[in-house]
Image (cartoon, rainbow, N blue to C red; front, top):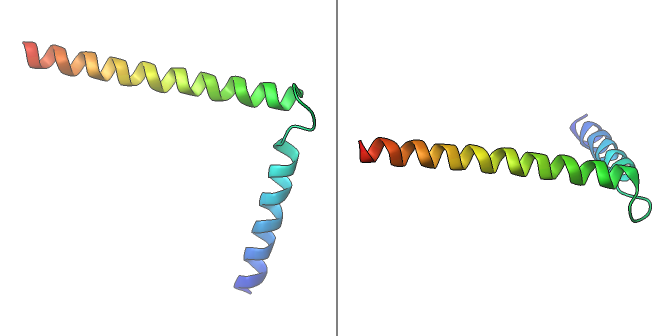
Length: 61
């Protein structure tokens, strides 16, 4: 039973990876994923900078 479930999960993972992998350079999925990744990177970077600034401000006061 567990082997069957893990096999099904592996198949589903491969299907998702295949559907998300770009078929050609500049594919719309590739551009969308890159844009989303960049947006997440910017968001996390802003949170880190804000946390650092707040921490420094607390130390100085």
